[in-house]
Length: 228
Ligand SMILES: [Zn+2]
Image 1 (tube, rainbow, N blue to C red):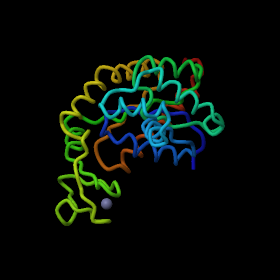
Image 2 (cartoon, rainbow, N blue to C red):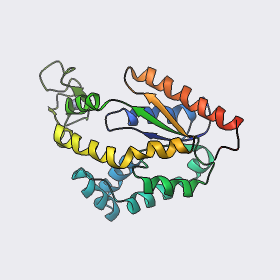
Image 3 (cartoon, helix red, strand yellow):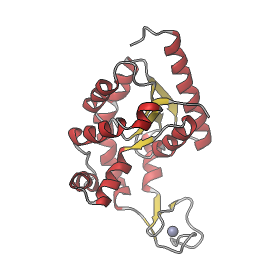
Image 4 (cartoon, rainbow, N blue to C red):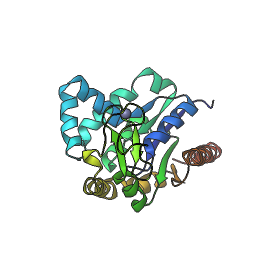
């Protein structure tokens, strides 16, 4: 196992960010910090912050910058992230968040920003074709359905389309991505931190591309310490 890294993962919804972030975190032995998971946990615990964040998420809207930044700053201050590093998933989503992260970490605080690049028509197909077991959360796709029509293979639960997986909801989230998140690619490119990876294909292959890309950027930065 390679040890220690400070990364963030960018990409459209449906690009496979979550899956890859978990694998990268395991590979480097660092915590996977998912803002979506943190918001859902806070909402389930019924904290006022969690309920507020959840309101935005169920409307398909972005949680405001000040709320997200506060939560992430608190999490990054914990020992595991301080000592080993982290993989950030779902943060930053806006330029304001990205600048605040740089301020929190300092100029040499990030090893790379990984962009998992998947064409828009591919993510719309992945998400709008997705069906989820309402009991256990197992995921299927209209092209890879359960054996018995829309009954979960694992536990016989109803397999349904989630409300926020309709093409309309997906299109709305992609608009946010284009407006707010895509400019981050230029931001990180300007800092010499951007690693763009082709996100189409088998998850194992995408993972290998990510690790190769991250190692290449780290080597480059080690050999030219004057890079900001
Ligand atoms: Zn199930």
